[in-house]
Image 1 (cartoon, rainbow, N blue to C red):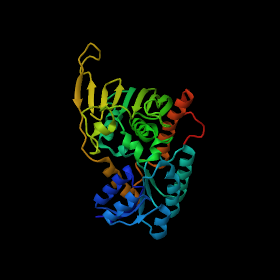
Image 2: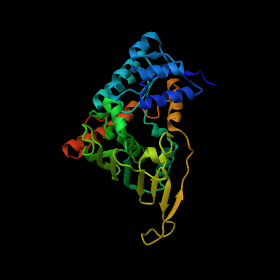
Image 3: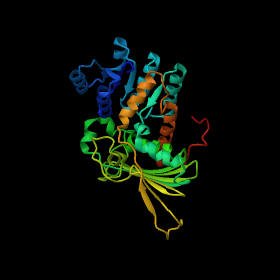
Image 4: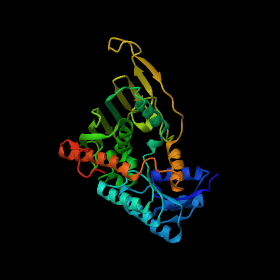
Length: 352
């Protein structure tokens, strides 16, 4: 067994605690510290008999772990990331890398100059379900992808917004918190997105953040896609509720993405593929078959890859520069909704 990697987790909120639990359970990892100023985080550190620090500066003054997981609120990502770069610490950075592309690029370029790897926490890149769907598309079993439909409907309770003020502030709505995962999934499965159009609404809660958005995507391949997202709808059609990968969410036997190609179609994450076995015509019967993928926790798989990244054994599956493309596309949704204009991406000057 390789020597255990000592990992500090910075930010012990909803997502940070999930990282802490997985680090504690992974034989090749050790929890070096929990970094978070809240009393709840201090209590968690005491419960786990782990060192506790109020901020990253205090940790780095006292100790230097082998690697860091950054799961703080988005606006702190760049500052904490730059501190890790200065200390030469590989990092698993929760998405998004930054609040805007320019700040994110500043961090990414600093990390590249210092040769400090960043693995960005789009954990679905590690999902066996997404990987199997990507294999099906890449093998041409759907033909040429022409149409994509994605649903991301769920209900965040009032307590979610009452627990932390930042969740009610601009930038904390479902577009940047949740849709960014969908955008990354679709880029991963179907290729680069060339332009976006969008509408947003905050009519249900009336908060400064959107609660619903509708998006039209044009892919560089010529395929078209639609995405609707809302955190106000009791519904089974979201990745969290359909994939069954994170056990805190009750699983439904539904899908949330549909990929349509010239030779067949696929529901994800059900991995149900539809095609004609004989004549290709809407008059002919369609046949369906269910693909399979192993049931594994993608956050565990992500952590295991991060251990290899921290040991410099392999590059990040999703590095900072590639994650910035997902961020840029997601921010284009915000821009398109604010301006009512089509926002192009692939033809922009000075691409990432």
